[in-house]
Image 1 (tube, rainbow, N blue to C red):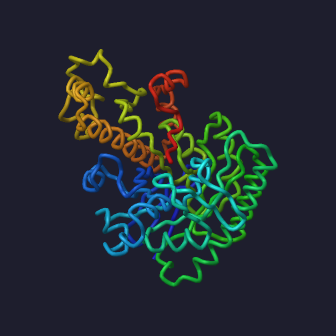
Image 2: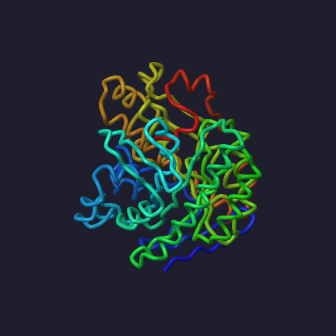
Image 3: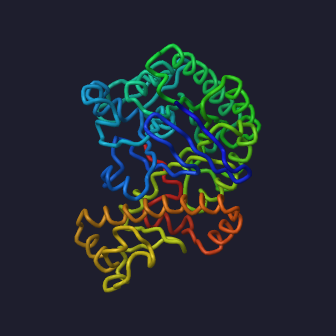
Length: 386
């Protein structure tokens, strides 16, 4: 049985029930694109409070392939994760693999980034693949346009996104075994807010179990990102879950919670960890830097994650300097714990009717690196992966 209930309106506090358990919202979903959250085991994720993870239809279809996953009992059993799983449809790869794909009116033809083999994803294919994976939340096929994008191109992308969404809904209804999964429609429109409103309204007319806001974190300035959210959420049903795809930094997520979004995913926690960057309540810490060579403090004082309770900055800096894989694991552990903990704190603040104060306090103390610093460090603000 699937159910989404809102126990607090205004700043939303919800509960989404799926076949593999309930999810308390707002929630952050670690990204496990290829059936693995990088460097972390399912048990470690569970122990740090992870409720739901994200997989990817395009990648899993190519490798290991559906037949392998079927023979091993479905995606949950294949990767050893017992909780809910959301799978993206592959629509983001329409953007990120632009040099390897051709868009048709009936779907997208890809040239595999692995071996060059042809791969086609249309509405029927993405529904069949996600049904075979057995994911709890499934996404419609959409066209994610680049930024910047002129209105004519964005309108064409919105038209295809709406047509494909309707086809996905029809195929989902035709497949009896697919009834175990929720289907979310994805609103597009780029930075053209009237198109976002139109797309959201048309998706609601079709009717979905939840709604996502796509085409954000593709390089646009943050004001446009926030504007895209604000242009879309008023036209989505209040009693359905809302998902901002590919967002974002800690501060961005808090701002999205304030704007009525329930679900978030982003590769940033593990991506920046691989460059020795740890998140803290006051911003980021480049723990692999030389100034921490003899620093006895944990990455963040007062943090209860495994890494901070057991290891110093000096040790973790040593691991990166020695190119030991444990360094990546420990910073990934901390960053995921930080993101998941941020959502726990946000939910507690909403429950106590103190979210606005929590938001102001977090924003006042948290500092994000500027774009120039990000470029020097080799990682980007938005962190959207293939």
